[in-house]
Image (cartoon, rainbow, N blue to C red; front, side, top):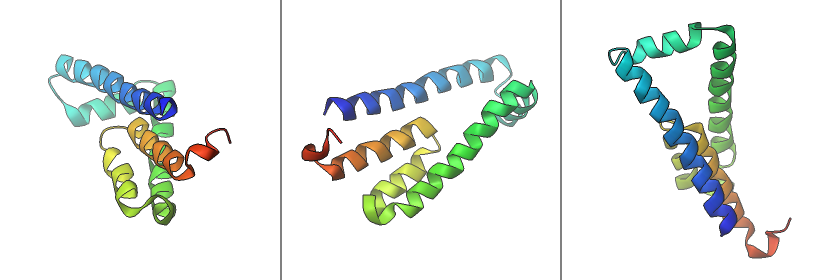
Length: 110
């Protein structure tokens, strides 16, 4: 249970921290949501690289949710995809917790 709680906490922390910075930036730039994304992707090559990775990982998580839906269940798969509107961190945490739930306590050390 500590493992699940730790992963869920880190997933939520990733979401809260990223949104705190996002809201701070939006407030300083007239709440221009789309302008924020354009600015983020074009500010510097480093930022473009990090955000491109985020976009690719988002598509990867969608693929995992679709390919694993029989194993993890349709509702868990849907939760993974729906949570991407919040954060890739939350989506990954949902997946990991569900996989560990399916493995059971006997497989915890594996």
